[in-house]
Amino acid sequence: MSNPAAVAAARAWIGTPYRHQASVRGVGADCLGLVRGVWRAVCGAEPEAVPPYAPDWSETQQDERLWARAAAHLVARPLPDLAPGDVILFRMRSGSVAKHLGIVAETGCAASFVHAYSGHAVVESPLSLPWRRRIVARFAFPDRRS
Image (cartoon, rainbow, N blue to C red; front, side):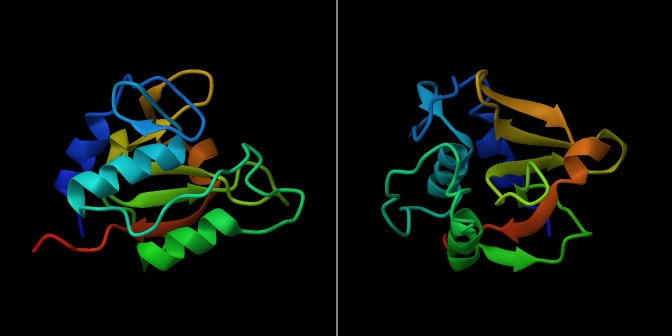
C-alpha cells in the first residue's frame, strides 16, 4: 500500500546536509534521522529515545540493532513488492550488518528512494540494481494518525 504522505515528508528533507545522529530538517540528518523526521510527520511523536550510535552500526559485534529497532516500530512487509512510502533497509556489504535506510519515492521504470547520503545531503537517488541488491528488509510506517 502506497503512503504518499511519507513520500512528501521525505522529499521535504531533500537538501538537508548529512550530519551523523542528527534529525532536523534543513539543518542535518543521517539516514536514521531522515526516517525519524518522516515518522514525526506521518505518525506523531517518536516511540522511543534514540541512544548514541557509531557510524559502523555495531558491525564489530555483528548485532543487527538497526533492523531490530525497525522491526519493533515499523510494520514488516514482504520484500519483492516495494511501494512508495516504504522504509527500506540496506546491507551495504556482504557479511556486514544492515546499516542504511531509505524511503521509496517512486516504483516502476523510474524507481527512486530518498536517503541521507554520507558526505553529501538528503537526496533522491535512482533505485538501481546495485541498490536493489542490497535491500534486506521492507517496512511501512504504522497508521497512527487515523
